[in-house]
Image (cartoon, rainbow, N blue to C red; front, side):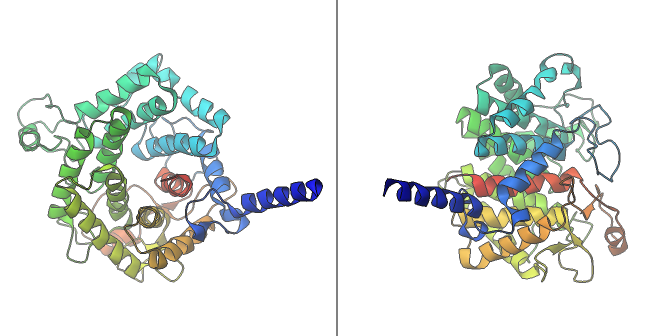
Length: 396
């Protein structure tokens, strides 16, 4: 009898492992072998560990080489790093966690001068890496460094009159000071990318400190972006003067809203507007999901090619909504599963995802978006694959 019970228990454990019992949503517990959450996440994280974060160019990557040129860590590469650390925690992979933490060690020493600058959202996000390390290890150096980036994001910029401190879309210093006086980060650009970059850093600071000021100020900024940029159909133009709903641009906002809703108290004055904006966007995305489960390079253009990075971002946003009870599971969970399986079908032998649009500036031209180059392994596509894995593995 004892032997029979042991065999039955072993069989149950094996079945549980095969079905992915650790995965939060039941729709993701019985996936094809090449789509299982733990295995895909591990492949993507291990691929990241084969390259220098400041000169991103792993095997099989077909884009511009290398990203960062050894001078900085690009924002989407930062996101892979942070989410690889989180993935290692969720899966109990202490060896991977150790390697990822050790990868940051030179930034206290020989790479100290190569840390990202702190006067622009695309660079300030770097602080989210040491904050994740602080959460995992309690390292005081990591905590101090990460909070320095988060706090500086709401401090007065230093520069000459008329100077666009930080560059790359930042406003002149006078306008930056106006934003700060109104309670917004001076790094505000009114580019929807910002609402992921700022949110990640500020929510990480909240997780480390428990201080609600970090999520409250990020929420205040996000509501301002919603009021300024969200259209009646729930989506966002790439820019006010560019009337195109570019997939990845919208993807940053789709990801930033649920990330912030996770930590913002429902009693916050910003919560109702933020949740309403999120739900409005999710309804639109569900309408525009294609038969193959993915979304277009231009979301509302049925003739343009399907793009992987935005599709992964939208999938993450669906999963988070279902997990937290903001979205109807019967509608959004199957849509997320369909998208995930389609995305996994685009992974090559190196765990590089195909059909990712390269970094793209705005332009008032449909042909501009139609003809943008597509690459394998671009970090804009790799990072949201890990967002999805972590969302499905995390316990609420």
